[in-house]
Image 1: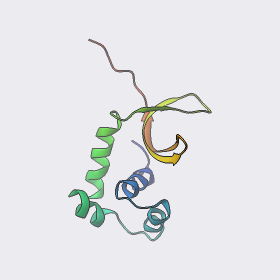
Image 2: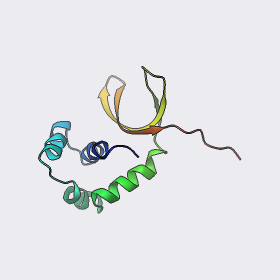
Image 3: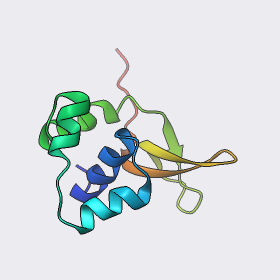
Length: 96
C-alpha cells in the first residue's frame, strides 16, 4: 500500500483542490473525512480502500530514471507530462 500522505494528495486531487490547498489541509492537521463524505459519501479510510482497489485498473507509467513500470493515479503537469500521486508496481496479468 502506498504511503498515507500519498492518499491524502490523491484525496485532494479527487476533490479538485490545488496542490497548495491540499498541503494546507495536511500541514494544518485537518482531515479529509468531511469533504470526502460530502462529495463521495465515504470517509478517508474508505476512500483509501477504494483507491487501492482501483489502482490496478489505472494506466501504466514508466519511470524515465529507473524504467520501472507502475500503475498510477497521476496529476497532469501539462505538455504530456505527469507526476504519480499513488502508484504500485505493475504486475503482468495471469493468462488462462
